[in-house]
Length: 213
Image 1: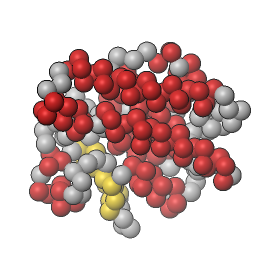
Image 2: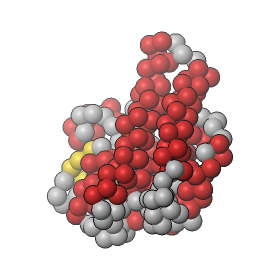
Image 3: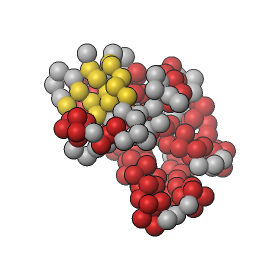
Image 4: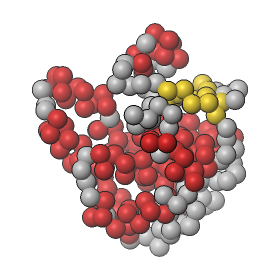
């Protein structure tokens, strides 16, 4: 059986949990407590020298990075699909996913926040303001993209969940953590509610994980 190394609050691990659930792939959850430094142990560094979660292992791969893991799952287990059939649709969904993965999430990642605290003495309110700023900047752009496109349906692209929703939904949880009101982005707020009706998303939520605190 596959194993997913993750941390309940990690939005990157959250994404992979959703994808696994949507595709109904059984897996073992292996908690790696980031705040206790378990990602820096020799055992985990031998597995993943980047010292990050998620990390996914099955009978074919041992791979980190949520984008790589989710693309692998889509390639190996194509049904149900989380990418559209058309080239243009796939590009659009990947673009939305990467707006989260590349432009929003890295700037409020735990190690970045710790670096701001330890090396620049930024206090907690300052760090929260930093994170909220970059989430708002990204969500402003995503909202405009979603609201202006006829390809937006119940979900980010059409009426079934795609990779775009898999990335957007966990980032919404981060937005709440940093005090942002999701209702300022009505399309994103509507898609959040659609995701909350899907079992695959609910089962993947941080509070529903065995290592939740």
